[in-house]
Length: 376
Length: 54
Image (cartoon, rainbow over all chains, first blue to last red; front, side, top):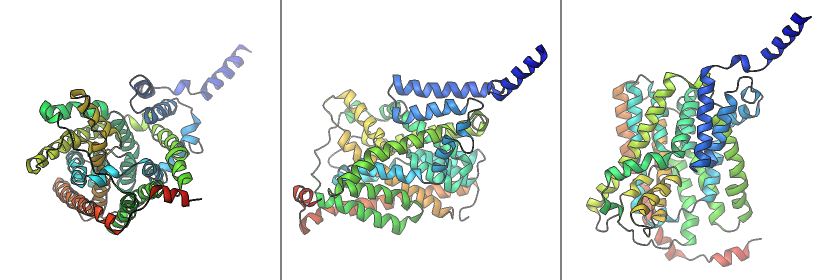
């Protein structure tokens, strides 16, 4: 009788996840909890980190059905893997974004390419570590600091690395307020950080409506591999700027965007299972991703300083760091670093120009990379 | 595969990609610099557009 009860209890325990817990799960749960704490206590991109952190915790609890085939988190991940979610994110971002700063100050657009040297530093580094050229490209694109684009290019080049690349890209994007300022300060003098920018010209409605149409045509004509993302970005923006589709633009920018963020974050977090994630490759990718972010920030700032050699009216070199994309986080970081020196130096609007150009810079780099590697 | 799967290929890919990106984005910058010309074509009034929508 006693043995029978023990047998039943043992069978019950076997059905739970308790007996399958290993140290890897504990490590990943701790990482997930840290993400949640950073979001709540430090306010580091809570919209991203809460979902990723919670989903990471749950996916490391053995026995959780949510990450298994048929589970909701698993379906969320399929939405990312099948490239449904990244274009929709861009659609929402387009509806939320005013491209006026980019149109008003076209000189700063070049910073959107300058700040992407990090992509190539990571790419060469990954190849030197023994990754294939396609895997290296997927790792390098983390340096574009553009989550949906990183996911998109990674799925095309090395889908098996998607969990590591997506997690590195989104985690570093959320941690940009920590990563970027030391590099920005190291490469600029106080005098340079104090430079104030001249007020921009106003951008007319006609220009704002023409912008998404022109860019939509250019991108589909010259960069078909990455056109789905930029096209959706432009469609969202056209809904916003044409003024006659308020309902659609508000839905895209608010309700739809919120739903997509939930799906995206739980989908990414659900890939952080210890068995797949705690590998030496992941550590290499995470380190290369960090190098890519640091390199991109540095090359953007240096690019702005090089521009100053030729410009009559000097620009604040902190703007260069915003060229790394990650809208609007990088622009906000540039503004905060400048405001620490001079509270009245409002750099945010100016930083949005290179920041938005950075989105195009990443897309162009990704498109060229896919073309050179012969991937459609 | 067009680019060789070697460290040389990675460097080649990086150099071509980086410089082409700068060229293309400069091209976008030039197109944007011409945008003020659109204002010579005509002007759209925000209020009129809003009022004409259903």
